[in-house]
Image: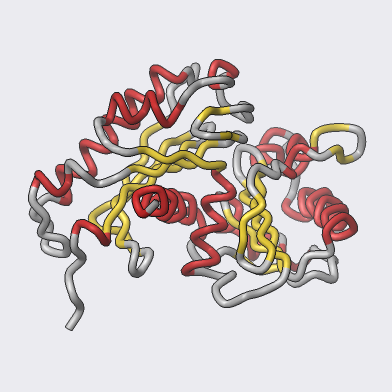
Length: 271
């Protein structure tokens, strides 16, 4: 018989993307959601004040659904203490956002952990969205038990990257912004580029394959893990990839960012 999670087994994960903000309460023992995943469109423009307000509303909705839930019967006082982790499409240091990829440039220099914590009235940890997705895949998914060098790519509005060496994260790599054919790589190889340029999957995969070959020459990884929105349609393009490095689809698919953000929140809680 499964043991119900205690408040210490739970955290809230939020995945902040250019088009949507997704969140869920996560059972840290299993990586499974407690209650429903909720998605809210990203405000436009995606300035910090508007986005943080949406995140606060999202957290309240998630907790309202979990308090007294059959799978996690926790009291409101316990729910009020659950930490929040947020994956952001940016590099960050010490809780401050340093770059802004596919979000409003007003995020640059924003003290996100402090400001989000004040609004949400609970501990908040932030990290690069692809980094936290990678944390989830190495704990619960396609990278579990794998050693060596692993590159996790999240393919959606942009291209995020998480680089891991023997299970240890090298943060803020932002490999989607490497130069490819004279421009920013993600401009050609993000899933949004396929739609914007009206490419067939085969034509899109040709550019993405060039990108993987470039990463292979630079890092010689042992494994590529593909996540993000395009991971749900991997059957449309995997057959066109020619890199020597094994390529697998993220087990958690587009939920990896939420699970990894919750793991990040728990890591900060445990310090």
